[in-house]
Every structure is written in C-alpha cells, then in structure tokens.
Image 1 (cartoon, helix red, strand yellow):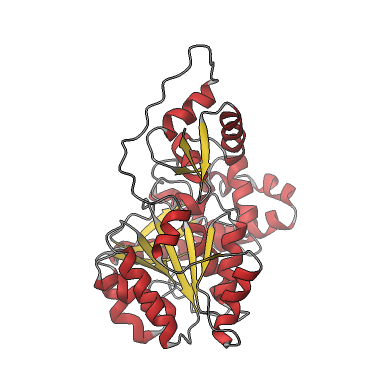
Image 2 (image 1 turned 45 degrees about the vertical axis):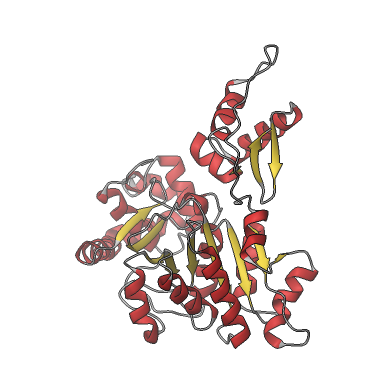
Length: 371
C-alpha cells in the first residue's frame, strides 16, 4: 500500500472507520498490527473477542454488513463524480500531512493539482474580514503569484474566499479544505468559486458524502489545513476562533506560522497581535518575509557540490541524507523523511550528527542545506 491502494482495500478502510468507537488511533494501530484494513476485518470471531469492546463492535458491524454498504456507496459516488479517494498509505496522499499524528486515513479529493506541491502556504483568517484584511490578503497572493506556490484555505467567508478568488485571478493553484462531504458546497454562495478552483486546484475533505458542515467538523478541518502546509499565514483574527486553532496546530506540527499585525484594540487584530507578542508567529509585512524565513529566496549561485574530505567517513544513513540534501538549495526535515523513507526521529538524529561534522547547516524556516 505504499504507492497505490487497491480499491478493495479502500473499501475496507472506509468500512473500518464506520465501525462505532473505532477512531483514527485505534484503526491505525490495528492496521499496523495486521497489515491492512482488509486483514483487520477478516479475522476470526474468537480473535475479535480478545479485543474487548472494540472487538464486539467489529463483530456486530460485520454481522449487520452496513459498514460495507456505506463504503460501496462512497466508492460508487466518487467514481461517478471524478473524486479521488486517497489512502493514508499511498504516494498521492499529502505527505506533509502524513507526518502529523492525527492525519486522516482517508481523504476525498476532486481537482487537478498535486497535493504534494513543492511549496504550500495556508492563508486563514476571520470570516468578518475588514477591507484592510482583504487588501492585505490580496497583496500577499499577488506577490506570491509566479513563485510556484499552492494556496490552501477553508472556502469560508472573509479571508478564505478572498485568498481563493485572488489565487484564481493570478492562476495560482488553490485548494479548499472542507468540513463536509464533496456532494455539497458550504456556504452555497461559494459554489461558483469552488467550481473554478477545480481547474487549477481542487477541493479536499476527510468526510464522506452526505456529511453536513456541523460545528465539530471545522476544528478537524483546520488540522488538515495546518498539516498540509509549509507555512500558515493568519490575516485578521479575534483572540479566539478557527484561525487561532489553525495557528496552534501549525506550531504543534512544527510549521512556520506568520501573522499580520493590526491596529491595537481592533477586535480582529487581537489574535494576530497576540500570536506575534507571544512568539507563536513571525511578523509578516510582505511575502518576501515569508520567502526569507522559509528559504525560498532565489539564489543566483549554482548548487554547491560537496567534495568529501578523504578521511571523513559517513554512515550509510548520513550519506543518504547528504545525497538528498545536495539536490536542493534547502530542504525541510519532513521532505527529507519522505524522500529517504526514514522516520522523523531517524532524520533528526542524523541531521544533528551531520551538523556536528560541519557538512550541513540549518537555514531559516527549519530547512537544511549543504555547507
């Protein structure tokens, strides 16, 4: 399941997640133990009985058969409506998100872009954006145009829709992460924009069809926005709300968070000012600040070629990392882990050793480059 996931396995994944009281954590543990969702749902009754309440839930669900009916309905709808079902275990799944502990096992995507784009920026903010906030948002998107960036947001009122619309105008790919199924668009007034996004971007959700945009789905949606991104830009936010949740998640996931400073005392500047004041976000005044922190600034010099000291011996893991980092001006730890198939902890350890040996250096934006 490391490259593509067979349709039959996706059916079992969807069915497994439909079983009551089996959340992401339990489902992942079961799959890790038995190798696949199909294997988990093919165990003997006596084996399930050793699982306690979870096992009893599986037995009951399999006897009723409803979970497979739901799964087949999802697959049929997606097949008929050009919706891609992305399994956590395949290459097309957003690899940045995969490193987050609460990454969904299944994503539904409709669109025409690469969810593993080389540069991904999330832009979030209040639904009650002021003219100041909208203008800042538009300026940032305009400045990012032509820099090969994918813009993601939540298709909500205010800052979100402003970011999507401006991205469309400048032919910058943009993805909306939804808090409901792909059989509807919320809010309905953004339907036309959503359709335009499909041509050079797309719509993404973890929710099956007929899932309504219930309140509890929005914080869950925010973790996908944060997890998929290299950086998160907060443009206007009250001291509490969805954007602040996304910023916190970004910090938890080791993403770079940026905030636009606002007027003191203004309700929708309080959140951004608080993030900056408490060192939870970089102060952002222009897109060049983001490019500098993330190490995206263009370099005129040719990539450096390392000539090894004859007496310096590298372990196979160190050599693997050196070879990968040498291919880039700078590269993040997440990207290194994906490209080398090593765990984050393994990569972190090897990077530290390579720094001690004077072969690499840490750059702004938590990236690494060859010295």
